Image (cartoon, rainbow, N blue to C red; front, side, top):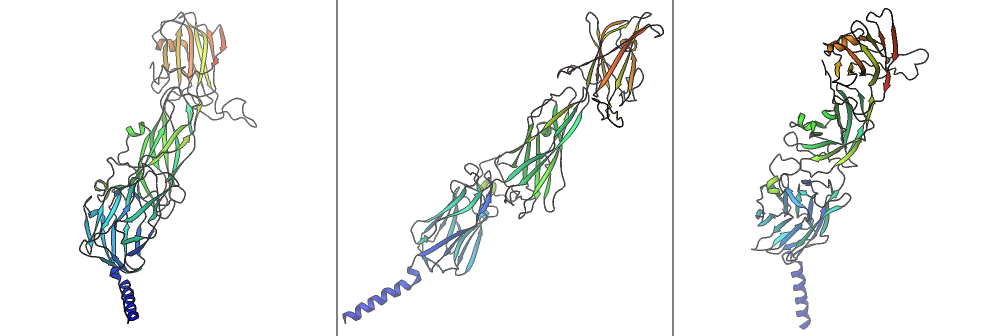
Length: 506
């Protein structure tokens, strides 16, 4: 009889243990590992799935906590919480969930969104049954702000725990983000300037921005309404050189990049270019390039300048602390803190100017006059060899003349131009063409400057290289006596003609 009672008691305990309503629910957690930029303020985290390993009940008032710290939950625009019970899934768009306020999903289960964690609370009125292998709890589409702590190569883990222990987790810590460098920047070409005394010279550089490594979704965008931006910043340009324009080059299919609507001359002057990515290939490594145009102002440029720098960062940055209740409006851009990737822009200054000095010159009406001949010796090609030391590249440019009176006095500056042509040999623009010679009298130059006579030095500044010249002092009619002297070719200091600009003295 005693044995029978023992058997009945044992059988009863076995039957109680077999009733699901009396068993806790062991969960296993899985996740997807998304690549994420370390400067992301709304980086897309991987999905999290808690699946019941065995049938059972979660106790009344149980709380399951998913902790994302130190990241901040920054956007719920596309986020969803899903609870599957009895094989039936119920999804709740989290963009509809008020901040820090429980929102019902199904069967009395609520979800609460806090800055760095998500809380699932079970109903107080009774247990909640989960079936093995089919029932689960999921979070997807969550966006996080990680820029304050993320480093390349590290991961972000989510830790899951329960308060009462009726929902146990076999693997409570799972990774949802791997931080990788999002973009690379390379520059091709050299800014090459032909240095003149006057005029503006343009040059270009091409900058390529690419998704780095295997991060095929680094250019993730919310489309034309809220594009991802790339901000380019040029720094270290030499004095006299400025960024003046940008053009997006041909793009691969599926990638759309345009200049931002706010791009302006003022931004160019500050060295800034803003680009909008409105479409991309999420599964391909995208690259695009931009040709930047630079111009030089009139005047001398420094020779052998150090390279300038071009940096790029994904943008825009958040204007306010990126809590999701601020940033979850439909159409918001993906947000990024500045993270600069840089490349150098080499700069070469080629001097295309010559300074000539005629030491002694005289114009005394009725007694003496002085003639000048300035030769443009560029553009000569001699078969079978070129003239040693001469520039075979033909250059056309104007000429600036400065008259320095003997004993001091105010110099006079004359600049050849379309409306300022004297002498012979200049074209209609006042330029001296390759292999050409300009001849002019001192009397004509001096009278332009208001002199009634002149004795002194004369300097010629040509906007082409390899200029040579002679002067010849003679009687007024160049009939009886004339003495000629080759002009001195002077080294060009950086400020040789800094006080004079184009058109001075006209």
